[in-house]
Image 1 (cartoon, rainbow, N blue to C red):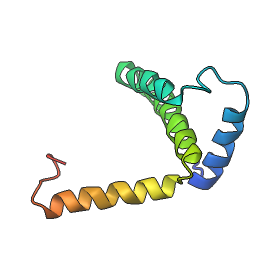
Image 2 (image 1 turned 90 degrees about the vertical axis):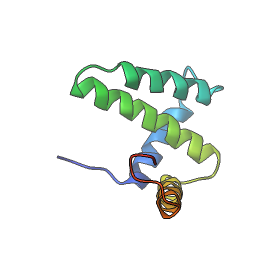
Image 3 (image 1 turned 30 degrees about the vertical axis):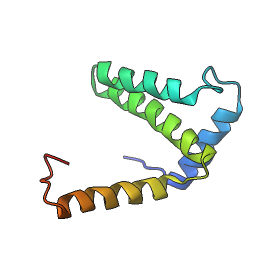
Length: 93
């Protein structure tokens, strides 16, 4: 399986954002629509495609807020660790 770095993905995703995009002025609404499409996805390939669309919106929103995917990943792991240190089990996190 081929992979891509988060930095290269971000650079490429931003390129597509700069082109006319249907949710260019309302990225959060686009994110919400894509989240629903993930919920409704059937089959592995469709699920991967919809997760990719969701990742695109997250990446563009993060870039617009001057955040990197790495920062968001680290913040999320830190939050999960804090929750576990406060006694929550992984199922409760």
